[in-house]
Each structure stands twice: as structure tokens, then as C-alpha cells.
Length: 111
Length: 112
Figure 1 (cartoon, each protein chain N blue to C red):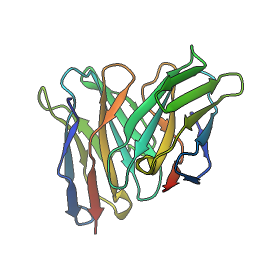
Figure 2: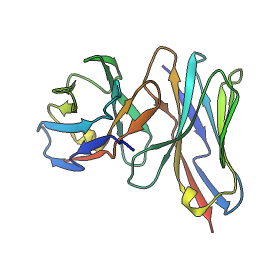
Figure 3: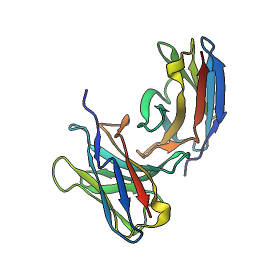
């Protein structure tokens, strides 16, 4: 059964550094998403992407964040200048229509 | 935007008993309601979903009910087993949107 994959599984960075989180969505899916989950809290929506552009974004997704689909398979989330409060688990998800399937996550630790 | 409330935050049941988790939502235009199970350190996994045109859906030991008038939906797990222990999240998707609005989660513990 196809699954969403994410790399790396764990990223440690210094405050102010740029990070890029990578995702490979399920191949026939059209909608892509990023969510984050701060330890012990609920999953929060960041951004959705369809037809090579952002379709929706939350208040969390400010100018420090960007997304890109650089080729036919990868979907990336970039954080330009990381803050301590960006430490969280970041999940990528994809869907054909509305059933969203999540990747295993990238744990981002900002020191 | 949509606001999803979930109760209880923790739930302990004896193996074989039933478990019920309840969620309410605020946006009457929401039309898709999935439930996710998340084991410690793992990804959320879709276990069942319901759309606004039906009131109940069942898949083996798991069922979900939806009351659109009251804007609440519930997850029912029967004959619970220790492997059902996890955090369960409800979510809602408003019409015209794709993003999931999650509840705060319920930590279910099934005691053998």
C-alpha cells in the first residue's frame, strides 16, 4: 500500500537557521498539506497546496514559511529563520479528494 | 474558522468494554468528519470517516455517528483490545476547504 514518506525523521538546528523539510506524497494524489504538532498538543494545519499553488494557509504560516513542489514527486516546507517555538513534529499529508494520509513526520528541534 | 471540541481528554476502559469519544464543531457548513488514531511517536492514521449526508457508519468494531442539527459526532469502539490504546483525534473539514481542523485528542487506555 503506498504511503507518504518524509525526510529527515529528525532535524536539529540552531535558532535563526533555515531548514527544509521534505515529503514525497502518494503518487496519484492531487492535494498536499503540511501540519505541525507541538509535543502533547493537537495537530495544527499550516498550508494546503493544489495545482502548483497554495490553496489555503493558516495564521501560523507566516512569511517565514514557504512551500514548493520542485519536481513531480517532492513537496517541501522551508522555514527561513527558525525560532525556538518552531520546535514541533511536522507532518506532510496528501489526498486524492478528502481522505488525507499522513507521513511519519519530521521532528524539528530548534536550539 | 472551524472550532472542534473533543471530550474526554483521557479515557480508561477494561478490555472488552466499549469506549465513546465525543466531538462538537462550530461551522454548520462542515461536511467531512474523519477520525485519526495516533500511537506514541507515530503518524496519525485514518481509521474511519463520515460525510454529512449520512448519520452513521460502521467498520467492524468501530462506528461513527453524526448529528448535524446538534453539530456533534462520536466515535464508538466496541470490544476494546489493548492495541486500541492510543490518542484519538476527531477532525472536521468545512465545505469548500480541504484542511483538517483537529480536536484536542483523547488518550484511550485499554486495561488488560
